[in-house]
Length: 363
Image (cartoon, rainbow, N blue to C red; front, side, top):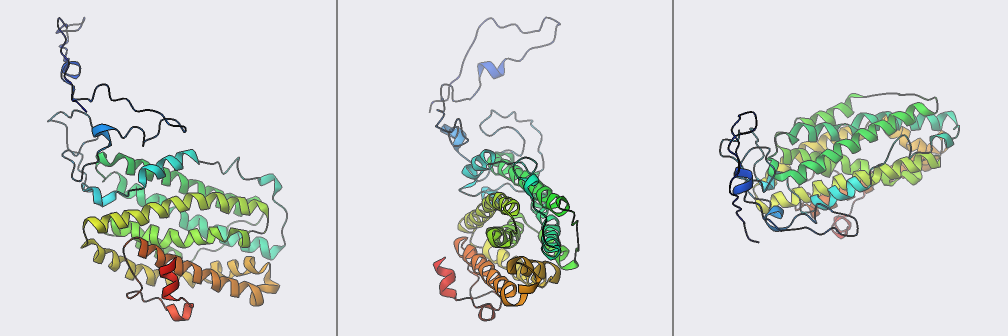
């Protein structure tokens, strides 16, 4: 690609009102003039415009401004004070594609859930669904607060990662909305909030680095919630809840995919980061175990899985144990994919949970 320089003669030096004019943008712009991206079948995607130097994301950007990557930046452009200035701090190889998927699959908690078809449910089932939705409303917004805390600290040359995190914030706002609406829609209301939930959320938001935070949130926290959404077919007492869990699941899967690949990229670029992540997960697993003992959320799930309180012991609790086994197995498999093997470091009681390390490696 050739960098072009244009010259124009006889341009006025002052405006009609006498103000000096600067034609530098026209005379000496360092743009790749003539480089023209071609729209694909889906339209003009972020992948399509990643052409020439515009598609090159620097490992260590020269500037800390909000100038668009590829622009001709003035030397006196102010420093925005970004602290995440290495590509490995925030990047994931799948982030551009995930952004395009996110904007293409936005949905509405108002229009896309068939609220008018919500049936009247037995009191125990309604109470259980309202308790699950109360807890989910509480924990979902951490995945919006956490990106918001770190995004303004990210170098603007990593614009695609910042754009993706904007979609995550919108996704989580919608999740909080849909679960709050479900708790209220059938006359049940919002139920119990316990300290164990807040402890996990505080651990995530107070992580000392973005990479630690994303490991705690995406690998651990959101990964566990994703498996609950995947069990929506068993948890949901009506097609309304099935639709709700299905729509939330597609969003959560994107967030987990970004976090997994970000950790992988960070560790590949700097293997010393691995120990920092392990330390965060050592603590996070302990806090998550405490969250898992939340009797309100756990017993409500068991009631839904069993189809009512009369089957909570013979059906509900066994299915709940199976769900927990799936959650921990999936978590450990994500860590393997991220290049952070926890099999020989985790303090989780794998034998008690019935988890075979070979099964983890096969996932």
